[in-house]
Image (cartoon, one colour):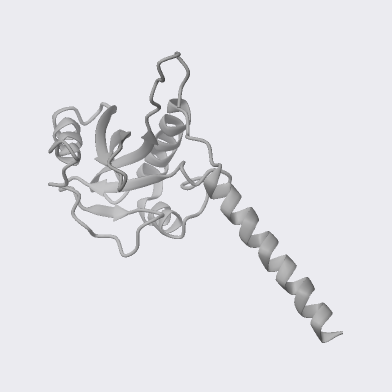
Length: 172
C-alpha cells in the first residue's frame, strides 16, 4: 500500500515536471503586437500607480509576465539605466547602462539616449548575443518612456527574440 502511494505520487510529480518543462520549452515567441501591447499596458499602470505595479511585476504576476508564455514579460528601467524591477531577475537594481552585445553595441545606452531625446516616443532597439555553441541569437526590445505616479521617469521594456529567415523563405 505504501509503495503504491509512493508510485502514484512520483507519477504526479513527473507529470508536473513534464508539463512545466513543456510550457517553457514550447513557448511561442511573442509577436511584435503582443510585446507592444504589454509594454503600453504596463506604462499606463506605472503612470497610475507605480508602487503597486512594481510590486506586481516583482511578484511575477500577470499580465506583467504571461503564465501561458513566459517569454512575454515587461520590465522597468530607471532613467539612469538601473533595472528597477523585472519579473525574472531578483534582486533588482543592476545597472543595465554599459552592457554590450556580442558586437560591442551598448543597446541599453541606445535605449536611454532615445528615451531622453524623445520622452513621448516609443521604439525598438535590437542586439545580438553569441550562444555557447557560437551561433548568434538576436533580440529586440520595445521601450516606452513614462513618468510614474511617484513623479519619477522610467522606461518600460519588453523583449522579443527575432526570427531568422531561412533560405527557403520560412521563419526559424
